[in-house]
Every structure is written in structure tokens, then in C-alpha cells.
Image 1: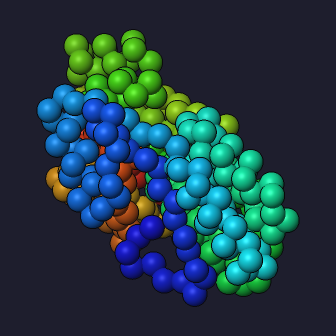
Image 2: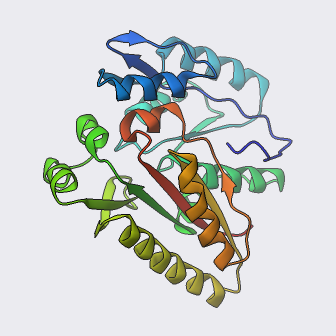
Length: 265
């Protein structure tokens, strides 16, 4: 969630668990720094599902407190979190779990759209989640695929190419929720060119719908913000920056960034 977002709807988060050398990290403000330090040292960094007892306790308390509880999970094809949430939510008639079929800043965009509609009195359904997601373009630039390869989130062939030929994958999350290769680019300059091309295609479609756009981003390094501002300036919008988060950091590292263009709302 971006820090400058405001809503009157109460939001609760259930974090995934992060382990370094099989030792679980406590959820704290410096958890991302600890993950990056471990990656630099070549230590084993892994994520795991949220604690079952934490999910059960949270859902039980919320179902008694509210008439309706909406739960947005990361893609079920990238994590077992959705299945865990769905199984526990089946105990309650007023807890509804949705598979975002995405992660990171695309989840942020979907969540903000959800909250806006809830504030307007709308009852959220599965088709709404799909519609929000379809109103956005999510691209992920990865300049070092080593961590992705370790986590099993990308093929080994692409990992080898990335190391030997300076091929940088541009990824997205497909409509079914899987990681998908958009294009391979030789060098960072080409990565930026491709992202600008894809962004222009999305903006052109938005113009035909007479809609404005929003830009969200999560960066592994502060240096990457310059490019995000460069893209945003093309369309005279202010980008929203969101923390990359411990789970994504674990699987991607800091050598990359994500950018999302979404229809304004």
C-alpha cells in the first residue's frame, strides 16, 4: 500500500513468512534490508505461507466485527496463500476471498480500485477483480535473474542467457496469474525502450476510452526511480511509489523494478 493513500475502510494485512538459512525473520521495519544483506552474502532466503493460526484468528475476529470481509490474495499460481485463505474462509458466510492473479503493485492497484468501489457501496464480486486487473499494464524489469532462478520463478535457460549474454527479461503476470516473459532485451537501454513502447500502446488504448492513467512503481534501487519519472513525465502524471516488500525482494532481489500503468479512477 502506498503511504499517501487514504481510505475510511479498515485494512488488515497478513504477511508471508520469510526465512534466512531456515531461521524465520521477525516482521519489522528493517526486514527488507536483512533480506538484501542475506542475498548479497549468498545465503538461503525463502518465503513460506502465512501462519495458519494467524489467518484463523484474523478471519474469526473480522467475521464477527463486520458484515462483509473481502480478502485479496496474491496469485494462486505463485503461492499457496490463496488456497490457505479460501479453505479457512469457508467457515464463514461473510468472508469472501479473491485471487488477484497477480502480485506487487498490480495488487496495489486492484486493492485501491476495490476500496474505491466499497466506499461507493458496491458489493465486490470476482468479475470486479478481473475488470480492475484488466484495466492495467504491469511490467517487471529484472537486471539480474539469479534470485528469480533460485526461487524457481523463471526458467533456467533464461537465467543462463541473462548471465552470459546480458539478456534482460521483461516480465509480466499473465491473465491466469503465471509469470510470463514479455520480451528479452539486450542491455538496460533496450529494456527501457521496450517499456516505453508498451506504455505508449496502453496509453493509446486509454485515450480511445477517454480515460486518464495512473502510474505505480516499485524499485529495487533508488537509481531506477529516474526512469519511472521519465515515463510519467511523458504523460504528465505523478508516479506513486510503493515499497517493493519482503516477499518480492526475496524472489527478485534489488536489481530491477516494476512499473504499472492503470486507468484512472
